[in-house]
Length: 263
Image (tube, rainbow, N blue to C red; front, side, top):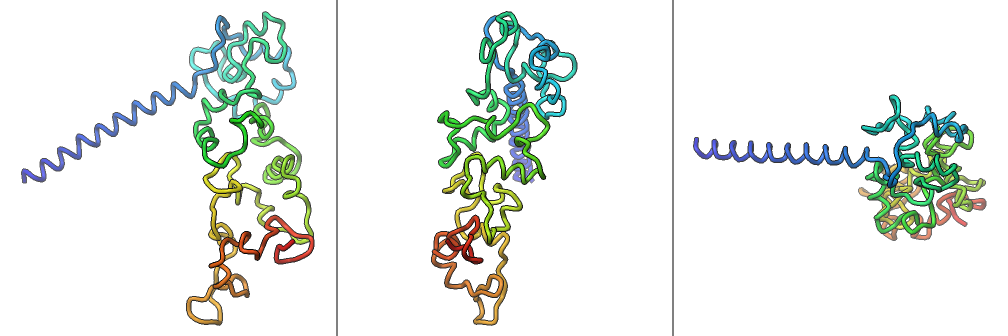
């Protein structure tokens, strides 16, 4: 009985310690996330003042997810917005406006974006990543922070917009093909992690398992254990490497010459 009491008591202490740690972590995280950028000597002026000059942004901004970011203590009625990302705007207004004048511009520095998007920040620190932290890319090139779409609108369905966003840089991979890889209809992020990955080419998985998520293995007419994909024997092929690096389907995005995705 004493042993059981000791075990239960120890478990209870560990549980309370863990709960306390989580509460402290969550409260700390909340304070970190909602803290707006600081501009020395500047105070909040409110969204209406920003809208006097930035009419186009102000018109579309209420539909954006960013318009629902709340900053405690900010002198903005109800929902906040502009100054939660750009910092208090009084000195910017007094200076007559101007791009980057007495105001934080996330286009030049992703630090403000990272204050809320902690998971994305972590992904950009993975071995393979888009060159954002190196300064050769910025969040706004792919995302519209003021509009209602997560990705920059370019017509069509959401996934089509997403592919078109990638196609601005990756034109060769996104161009039309006679024999297209149907995965592109689902969107580039089916295979690629857009911010960062531990795998080459920003792949979500590095081996043939990535392809096998769609191209299911089936039992064939051969010996027990033989792997068929569709009606094609693949037992030996899968031992030579990934589907795209083993010399089988090298034109993984699409081909104009071969239905088996070959150049």
